[in-house]
Length: 303
Ligand code: NAP
Image (cartoon, rainbow, N blue to C red; front, side, top):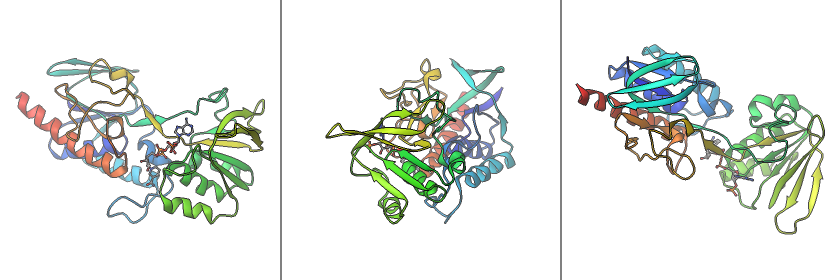
């Protein structure tokens, strides 16, 4: 039996692993997708204190290597169920069953879809949720980005380096993302803002050949001829599998405060998967530390 099972190998989960291992606890991490979590899709990280500039991929890789150097064990298995038997927590994955004294949920969040007809069908055929992964396939082409947060702004910036023309479509006229990112885009000749507008349809049979946008006020529609639509309208949690052991809020985030305790003894929540105001690398890392130390204290109290 492991001391602590960590579900999710993003910034929160890997930070928790480092703190737990340094506190002398054994750790088993489960990750069903890519190690590193959401940050691997960010080309430039410039807001992590002490690191002037790095890429998301490098950051995540460094964190993983650091966790491994302290003895972290990772299993690439998707967790399907968590059963709370008091002093024993049972974790069922797509490949097996494991036990731990404590569990840290660090499941992060997944991309929110726009909800367009044929959106999922067209993923890989012009629809993408990751500009840094797929942007190079659109070199020299016209593309659109939907969203108004930092992800959309950074995606538009990244794509403007490869693509002929980039439409940035946002449902309001004010951006949620940083003004610094907005200013950078305003200075680019090949970026065009389409504001107070929503993408309402995908055009093209086998591949995306355009997007229809509808003006929020006039209701007028027009079609932008683009080969790709990059959707960056935020994230949503993926905690359904844990609803039997921890309380979820109305949006599906795990109810836990800054102490990362969930209300279920021995089960903790860290990072973007829990209720919180600010979801950043720094807050994910901080949660990892807090959850790991709390889990260690909980385990010591069992003895
Ligand atoms: P976000 O900040 O939640 O922004 C989501 C954007 O999508 C908002 O502008 C929102 O519009 C729009 N949106 C949501 N649902 C929509 C819908 N159904 N139709 C049309 N538009 C919709 O998400 P994010 O940009 O992914 O960023 C997540 C967090 O990561 C943020 O805290 C962000 O600052 C952070 N981040 C930081 C960096 C960095 O510092 N380098 C990079 C990327 C992300 P409204 O504004 O109208 O609500």
